[in-house]
Length: 370
Image (cartoon, rainbow, N blue to C red; front, side):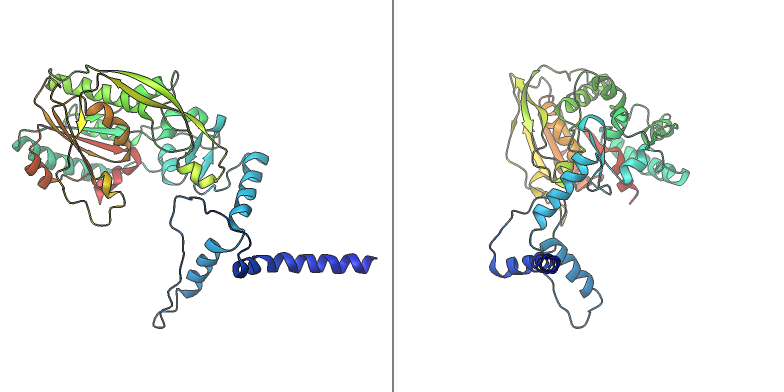
């Protein structure tokens, strides 16, 4: 009897090993591949002149395409997330309190003060913006730099205790202090207001790294407050109502692969909306830009109460401000320049704006140094 059981276990073990190979050939079970916020290796190119990378390419291909990959990964994710309360992908996602999820790596290092600017970097950024400021003055342009904070800074109470926040000043505070005399009023920092707002509203997505539209409205009001000192004719004439929805998407949602996860979301409904998106100019996006359709968005509002033309150089955090900012001005051109935050002289010379606004995520300010 013991021998029979032993042989049955051997047969079962071998069968389990062979099952993926049989499925590859026969295809009796198929599974949809979930998004993982990355590109998959779906083919291997063999170059006889360069075989050094072949073993790694083959391994990566097999890891991304072996049979039963999806159900095994889902089972693994559920065991770790629900069973042990830890992240299935700790290199990408930190599990916080009350279902809040946070980015790892550079973001958490910024939060902990490990990526603060050194003296050379601060001097370089000062030089860059002073040179740009001279250009803007020559073209009679007012310029503002709105720096979006990372979720970690706003929801620090939801981050696990082991990730201690830096007790020093933040990277944004470093810049505000550095620019205080040479460029007063240039930087707009929404972090303090967002921290206040977070006590009564959700201002970031739990399953993504972006802020939501409620945060976008807070940031827009701060922008109006700063602009109105130079342009008194700019004011917010519209009111916003909110429609509750359920959201099942986001960077962390894709990484964890747990389809049942969801969160509450709020969609803005602008009363008496006046602005409308019009035909694009057809400006050329940067080569290789992954979101070419988002590169240029152009709005007009004939009832804005001013004749101001505004150019907004943005990243993905600017998306949640577009419905509100586009209501403020006669014309608003939003440019998503592949996270470069460049001067974009060609666009300025072509569009001839009165105001230029930069919207930059706190952790991506290093791109200016490149």
